[in-house]
Image (cartoon, rainbow, N blue to C red; front, side):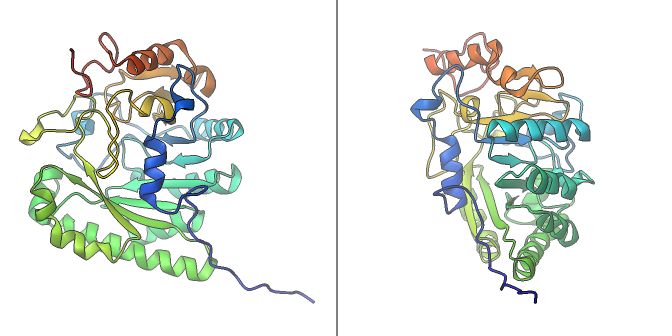
Length: 335
């Protein structure tokens, strides 16, 4: 006789002791004493760039400047580095970095490999939403995706065009894709017990943006588990002053829990791997200046604890990044 057990609904697993996406972000951006070292522990979270390509040209993102070659990650390298990092104890894998991962044709397979084969407890993804159709989102969620976040940074069609350079009419597609993602998430959860957290973030370009986006945010809030605001970043100095805006210094995290710009948490608590196999020290390495090692010919820990990374971390801890890759970042101002 076969006993069929009732399928339990699985809550979205963000991490031990963490119940919201903002708590998760705050944990990664908090630079605790154990991480304040030239050779910090293996990071809990690593982002892997499946593709450097993007379908939008947002003014606040230096990706449109094409300061480095843009292509897709080698699948054999992807599988090897994911196995290696999981064996080291990395727990969270973001399958994106500076590109739009929904342009990657094998995105669901990448999620499945990270989740089902390597056993990462938390696999997450951020998208601009334009290519995140219901069908693609369903494939990703069924593959085991734990978290999907939409970068929702527009008050309506006109601002969408102004910010991204894309057709104003495509704004509606983003909202429709977000609403469809909620329907897909609920259906997949009811059918399989697999729950993917669904989130949205918005950039506050200036004080007026909260007012501009009030109606749009109200529309999407019912579709997501959580919405939160981010400051405008200067992308390591590359987009500072774009469209007359004044960015925050460095990457201080999210509004409501801003971190000091130096020392920069990104150097210590999160890894970033580019499509061509480089370990980067920065969330915004659009031009390759933050290259800390070639993972095609050295191990993750050799690069993570390498001399280049150590020197950069030392300068950040001292609050003086003159002569380093961080020098152009507005997080640092000479005394």
